[in-house]
Each structure stands twice: as C-alpha cells, then as structure tokens.
Length: 257
Image (cartoon, rainbow, N blue to C red; front, side, top):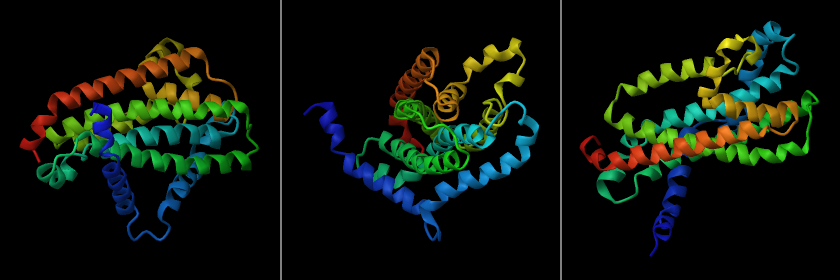
C-alpha cells in the first residue's frame, strides 16, 4: 500500500470531523450557515459607511474593493487562528486512536474554506447590485483559491504546532492578525503608502492574494504573471515550511495533550 493510499483511508474520518466542526459552529443558531453570507455583508456595510467617504476619490465601487480584501484575509487569519487549538481540542482522539494528526489541522482549514465559498455568494450579490464587471477572468478564481488554501494550510500547521506547546500564543496571535490586517491594504488603497516603503508590501503574502482577488473580481482583468508567480511561491514555501515544522514536532504532542 502506497503512502497516498494509506492516507486516503482517513478521508471518511476527515469528512466526519469537518461536519462535526461545522455543526458545532452553528449549533442552536437560527440562521446557521446563512451567517457566512450575512456576516461579510453586514461588515461591508459598516466599513463602507466608515471608510468610503475617506477614499471615495481613490476607490470606485468601494464595497467590492473592500469585500475582496475581507474575504481572503478572513479565511487566512480565521483558519490559522482556529488551527491553534486543533491538536489540544482533539486530545481525546489523539490519546485513544491512531489518526494522522494533520487531519485535525486540515479539518479546521476546510471548515474555513467552506465558509469562504459561502461568503462568495455575498460578493456575487454585491457585484450584481453595484453593476460590477463579470468577465471571463473570473475563471482564474479557482486557481487563486487553491493558492490561498495551500498557504493557509501551511500557516495553520505551524500555528497548530506552536499553539500546542505555547498556550499564550492564542492571545499573541490575535494581536498579530490585527496588525496583519492593517498592513494588508484591506480598507485603504495601496497608493496612500509612500513609494519608498512599498517594497515592504512584497513581504506580506496577504497583499498578493488580495491583489489577485481584486484584479479578478474588482477590476475584471487578468492578474499579472508576476503576481501569480509570487503568490505561488508563497503558497509552496509556506506549505513546505508547515509540513516540515509539523512533522518535526508531532511526536511531542502526546506530552502536551
């Protein structure tokens, strides 16, 4: 049996864990999964009222510009934050049966990805309402989502590893993601950043994924080859880093769960 065939045995278990996490998330919620559509819409309305007047000369169709950034960043930050507790939150399974531990991290990322897919409904509704462009370049969206998923899974593996060892990381990561959000040009145009500092944007992976999302959905154009190459490199490097860190430490998890 190959390693791939061996891992495929756990696919059913992964599905059950994802379904469990989604059900738990919306337990006793009257609207259930519908909140994944309403949340970005309500947030967009509030942020549009606050920021659109500040940047109305710089950004046309601010709701779409904002949503493109919010949806991508929320998935990246939210899934990686949930992954912090992926090992500790499944201590019972880890102590009692053998399951590849990355399954619990992957389930958190898939849960966030499902939310992202439902949230795209909100984006489509706003695009229709604001008469945004629907072009064939939207066919690039699955490629972008695949890259964002790879990056987020890699980041989540790192967070799950160190979140198991250092409980305070749960609090520190909240501060980090807040800072990360503000330097990702979600609410404001990149043009307001002094040109002498814009080279620093290349160090922020979120900027590249958000930029591609805006090219596809906001501007209706094909993303540049440079942006796709950079985004791909970040995705592959983060995934490899996550796998390396996780595999090097997963045998120590028993000491902490």
